[in-house]
Amino acid sequence: MKIAVVGTGYVGLVTGTCLAETGNQVICVDINEKKVKMMQDGQLPIYEPGLELLFHRNIKQERLHFTSNLAEAIAEAKIIFLALPTPPGGDGSADLSYVLGAAKDIAKLITDYKVIVTKSTVPVGTADKVTAVMNANTTIEFAVVSNPEFLREGVAVEDFMKPDRVVVGTKDERARKLMAELYAPYVRQGNPVIFMDERSSELTKYAANSFLATKISFMNEIANLCELVGADVDMVRRGIGADNRIGKRFLFSGIGYGGSCFPKDVQALAKSSEENKYNFRILNSVMEVNEIQKKVLVEKVKKYYKGDIKGKKFAMWGLAFKPETDDIREAPALYIIDELLAAGAEVSAFDPEAMKNVEALFGDKIKYAADQYEAIDGADALLIVTEWSLFRTPDFDQMDSLLKEKVIFDGRNLYDLDKMIDCGYYYNSIGRKE
Ligand code: UGA
Image (cartoon, rainbow, N blue to C red; front, side, top):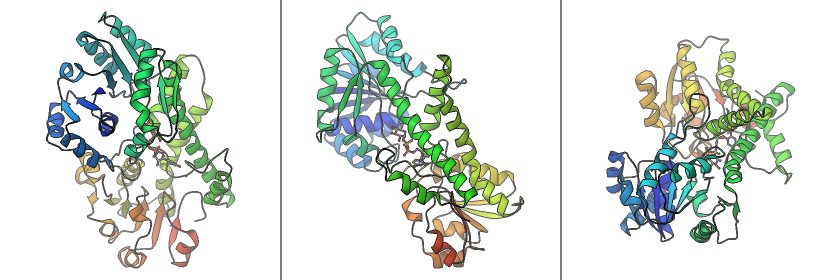
């Protein structure tokens, strides 16, 4: 099938590449000419495990193409995916100007039936808005379909190639058939393509992310309570996660959720509830808890040093909002660095992928170590911020010799509590005994 993908951000690039992998002809289009040139030259602008292999393979086999010319991209495409940004506007609701702008441009260009798919996370009612914009600019037949993405950064390729489910919102029979055909190779194990109306599909995306964020904030509150009552959140997590109705996944307490999705989507759902005169009480608490949780690690540090960390040197392991990505959007690390610097402390950081992005923000205000051991060399304490596998089994002998003092603040509960005590560490983690 011939496909166009408008927008080559994270979602667009993964979608385009993975659609090419099953034999479709895909043209990705972006207004950023420099980026298009880079991709035409075979350079991948993002880090995502497994993507590079597929990207090169499909370019080589001439199934994956890049252009900055929208007309060229959509001329022969049957399905046009919109994977454009929907940043939060000033009031927290999603800004649809990119999506609606593209719809208008596409409408003016089409000469035969097209399926326009919104892949971006868009508020309920967006498919209707896109339809209205298109109708105002063309008399050619088309269908607007909502097809939210549920990819996780770091495992996006796997999630795309073997999705738990695909959600497709459309009332157009022709579009439904095309979408079923397109996704058939990805759901061969029997996972469902769930068809529904556009509005339910749009809300499904927000509901999924908000529910997951709720699980995290709930566990973070349990963790805070654990510390007060002398319980261990990892035990409680295992205890409740064994109940199938609750499930094992997404119950890890930490230093708050970050990234480009959860904070934005929870806020947007709260906002759209408000616009519909509905007070979504739980969501407001989920956001409040997350704001507090981002501060937990720094509070622990300040408490340990009795409020005075001026001149102290802190090592930070991990900067990305989660492992296997270079993404630092809404990363707790940014808040932590800000707070430590504001209090007059020094920071020496290491992250396997996200250093460049942090350097672009903080410049020489912090030090960037070549590896995790260089980061702790001469540090008063270590802060663990992102749970990269690399940090799970460090060489403790080497650590002992490099750290000025055996003090660790662990925002991700990487180590066994008893082992750390046996090794003589002051080890302060989340929701467990100090
Ligand atoms: C999330 C969803 O998981 C995807 O299904 C969705 O498609 C995506 O948003 C999106 O809307 O595009 P992502 O933001 O890549 O994916 O990352 P997650 O792995 O979901 O983690 C989000 C945040 O939650 C991270 O900050 C992570 O540290 C935190 N988290 C996750 C926890 O604190 N505890 C957990 O148990 C799980």
